[in-house]
Image (cartoon, rainbow, N blue to C red; front, side, top):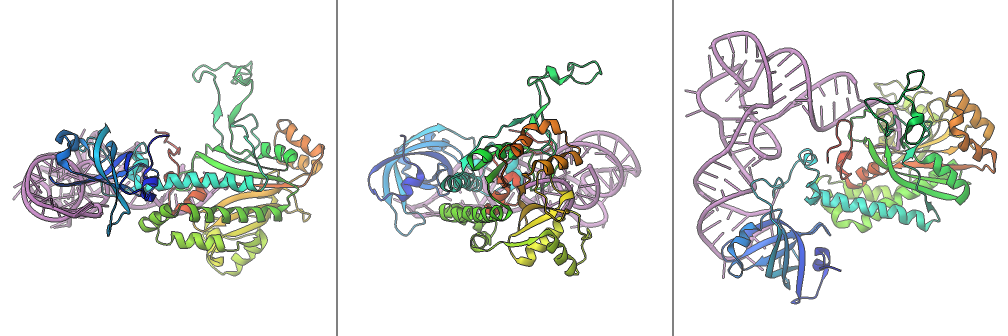
Length: 461
RNA sequence: UCCUCCUUAGCUCAGUUGGUUAGAGCGGCUGACUGUUAAUCAGUAGGUCCCUGGUUCGAGUCCAGGAGGGGGAGCCA
């Protein structure tokens, strides 16, 4: 089972027993009589202190143990009084796995800018900040599965490659095995996708929702959690070309059940991170955002303010505030409008019942003939963290809407069939995983909450 | 894609109205110190001033174009 982790050792009270630990040296200091190493193995944000008597070791060995070097240390676990750490290891044996030339190793004892660390994304997991972010990322993923599993949801693997281009959520990345220079062409001179791997045009998915609905209409409650791809030329701290999305889909849920679930889930996840990642959150709170912990506690305890799109428009108009983009019923809300609402209610806001003309074809139409049962959850600074709706379950209404919007009906035959056979009211939403990571970590650039970010003009590593 | 700011040592940055040899802190290296906590102290090395072209007696500094990055906006999760 390997050696104990630093996390286990720091919590251990087995004083004066021999232990072996593996890790990477963060700092070394000392003199000819005594040497201190801070060794971190990624199991926890803290490093463990290793104390070595230089006379017991080869000079050349100690010389090559520098910041970044990988080592194995065997020695006695000793309780330390009046210091910054509960225990330390008095080294008897020191083994070097791999050295790290101090003249060229890019990570120093000092802090680095997040911009610089993005350029060395292969090494940045070794920093305190990215260790904390990646551990939180794991915990958040785990919490999502726990939340849904405990509530009777089934994890559905929706396809990554999709043959449907009707999802309408954004520009897509083409998937093809055709020769890019000399593709086969049909009689009209167009690229002949019948000769392509799947015999048709295929793309990377922009959403697992449509497939999620198929499963919800059989299993009741399902969720997807997988990578999602958008070929939009978006250059902002809130967009990625490859990101992870959670999409629950529930049969027999109306829009209000949907909002209840979204709010309960978000609060559960925030509370989970506060409970399970206290050390990492405390570190991020100290180094990046002094209000992080307080904001998370407040969000976990809050009640999200709910209002309709129409009420939001009235509120914005009544505010008398001068907006760069004028407020008018029927137009999509701009960032400045969302910010005003979130500031006004001093916390998360859920908006619902948007004009049908600015929303997707699959959303359930209200009886007023003007709006659909859409809902967006807006978070401070981040903006839209969740977008969802009650789905249109009436075959004729859905079919008419598809035709109205000039969506190729034949590509959605399978989607429409579920409204023909045993259709039921159902709802769902999409949660941007990295956007939630931004909120939970206090990081301000989405490229710093995913291990290897993919953005326009950047697929390094 | 649009607007805006930035690019000088390994990192973070200063560099005056254009003027001699481009600086600091940290990191690295050398040395001192028997318990340090991003140790401290002394010394030392380290530069394609993002690239290309232009103005000028003279450009890190001014102008034009390009590249890369940050922030804001749009698209959205």
